[in-house]
Length: 319
Image (cartoon, rainbow, N blue to C red; front, side, top):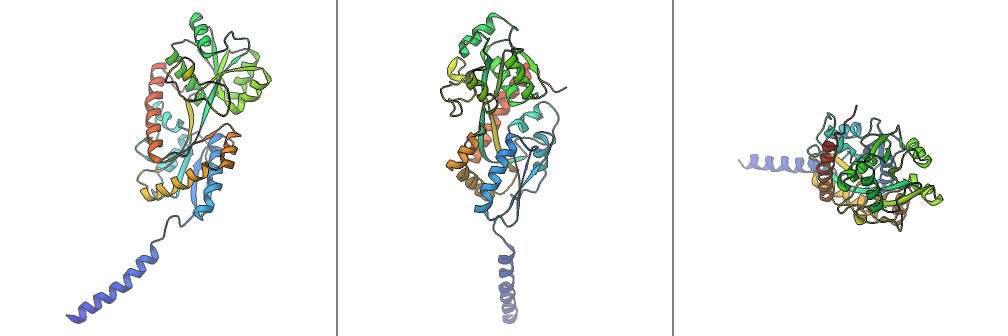
């Protein structure tokens, strides 16, 4: 019996070190960030974060661009192993699309929020021929001329499109949507006076505001934005509670270990608080946030509820 006990103890001393050897701390291999096609806001934020967290994590962070808008990157990550080595950065549109068409994931059930890295407000701008220099005056003008004002937008279900529909619903105005194949042709027609107003990114309209070709009435964030000093928020200009921003959230597959989520959140939050990173984001019309995972989860659920109602009430669909 004593020999058997001695043998078991000896076997235990051999097994335990082996387990210690095979258990590697996170991360122990390259991390993949899946995002939309190159050139957009999500791609820029993805690359900035990949460059910034690679050093502290001592691992390569690889960007994988996929076309097809937000649905494709989200679909890939929803089906990836929940080990912290695959995540995606995308605007909140990935959570909105399933409200309009069938998607191979559930935006809440299938993802673990990591951090809201940044947000980008839209700017409500009008052609200078429009007889309104404030949001209150625009609302009054729209109410005096039902369906008499047109607003332009690029892609359907884009943040700018939904910002306008939310404004219509909350301000109680009837303005007509004129869709374009991209924000650039929409902006050209706005400057030419073919349409009267538009919700657009600060990066795209700031030069035209400075040159006097467009007039900025308000920003769509809850508070005034440093991107456009001196311009009030829509919420403070006659539409209380209004808020519509592009959210650049970072997500992992559901059931990713909490310790891994915490590690990634800490590094991303630390990165976006750096002055040089904040300045680089500001340069492309984006404001750094660096939220907790819980705050991002709350924000996404609120966005689904709020914009889901807008989409339903407005009868928005993809043809």
